[in-house]
Image (cartoon, rainbow, N blue to C red; front, side, top):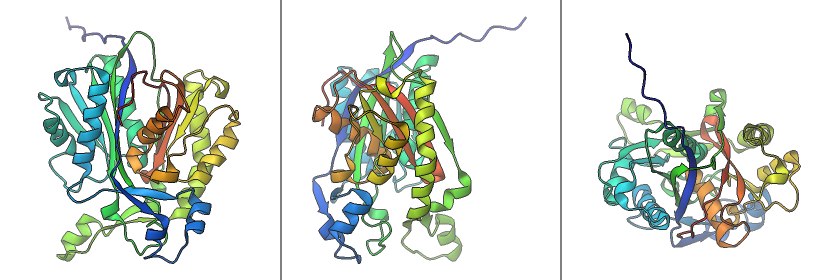
Length: 339
């Protein structure tokens, strides 16, 4: 006779709190244009970006994630020991091992939680949120800290006109916990590895090892290819995420897409036929593309500025390197935002 597997708890999940970290250093388009042949007007017209934040000396993905994570835990009202898992979505922890999440957990004083890094590029936060929600609903964890963080500035070739102006640094974190009602909808996710070359590191670590010489690894992006892919693909992903949660655009209180390019987001909005009454995140204007930190940072700005209230229904969509995407409908945290 075989024993039955322990049943899942059947619990629902929710975002309990939010905390973010934005570096102090503001880098304007004018400063970026000192090393590339471009203008403030050209950058704003094609991307919507006016400025971005770059991490300062001593700031890393780990330090930024620690700050955002600490604020999220404090805002949740939980004690540190109640966090039993930490997921760190990042593509810019510049050390192969150990994983950044375990370093952040130690810095936060968490007593030995499960910890792992998740690499899904700019879609990383939405991937991490989906994994955390499933951990809660399956009973594997009680409270999960999900951090989206990227330290993009060291990977930027500041003479590369195609990518130097696009990215910034920052971190955003949420605590995910149990709920009596569902407040994180099913994830819709996927990837198109045939176009993985569109956002890549050059040279790869292995190419440097084989060559037995150091060459600074830069992030390279084929902007037009990414733009076409996102404009064609992500609108359908957004609609599928709504359908998966049995929600319509008229039910939404906010749309929070990845802050990659304002023109891409405008195309998605038009494709969804989003009512003008639904505010759309525009953090890209002052923060640029912060990769895995993009969605939680945009969420914080909307809540801080009163564009949407805590508890509001929001559609989240992340997309980027891989080329990967993920989206879900969520209830925004009702606790005060720690920024």
